[in-house]
Length: 397
Image (cartoon, rainbow, N blue to C red; front, side, top):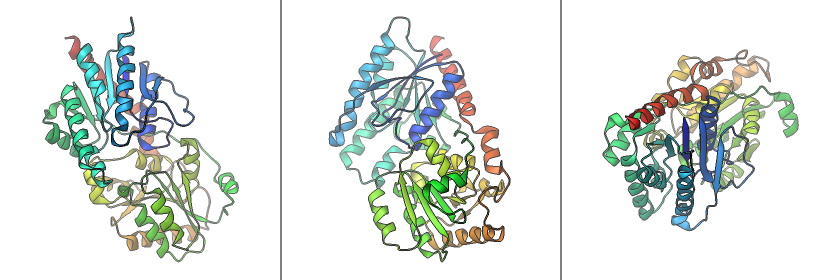
């Protein structure tokens, strides 16, 4: 199958959405499909990929900045689709802010369009304080694109209902897609800590994700400030709109080392996660329900694949993590409750002799086993491959 993909995400960025697209399209290419992605020119070194990329420049013009990629990227998509003998069987677009070009090209050339929606974009903009004009433009672009799509892929039923309500498309055009992550390569935690000058006997609390309010990093910082642990250290991986605010907040805590690593290549982030004792996902439940609305995130799967215990907010979607023995939950937004759970895990670790590896289980642990059993990129690609094949077959019929 020939797939022309379109996304405004810079794939060189070490963020969840970029990792998702790279992982999915790589897996589709491995399964024998020809994938060509139209994407912005990367601001950093582009990671190797099994699929082909056509990159176009993007100009920052305030609220209208994304339109520069939409126009140039749209023309790139059109030219690619018109190439003799290379007409794609389907156009696959990720809905990002002002995405509208894929729908226009699909209509003009009569190529079926499949749209992926991974979060509640309008709510993300509202939480970030984006102005009303931008939100109206986003809503108009979303309605046009969704109504042009032969199929819409979402992460969970809540987002499916939100899309139906906002765009008035039929529910039977929406499919719930599998969420996946990669399997990190083995690493040597002792070597990682030696590079960072962190003692093997240090209890490391890890976090990775976009520094947006929904991630709850402020709660994690407040919890760390409450801990009375002389051997604990907090590692924060990621960038986002609250980066500077969180760094100032951390500098005012005055307790224990808090390291901000910024955005890192996937392999470097993997090594840091695997070298932590526990990983924390302190989502703000109200914001998570509004934005994500799905049963699981790539970030949480990556935590599990790292084979570390996971402490996560008490969001109903994630109650299975405790059931499989891969971690436990705490009351969302409650720094005291989170601090209490971190201290309890620290005590268990100390009682076990403060091991650097093979704690609290011998590898592979329950989280890694869960990912291997059904949430790798190949699993996700197999599910999406079936949907794309049905869309293409319907368009021919």
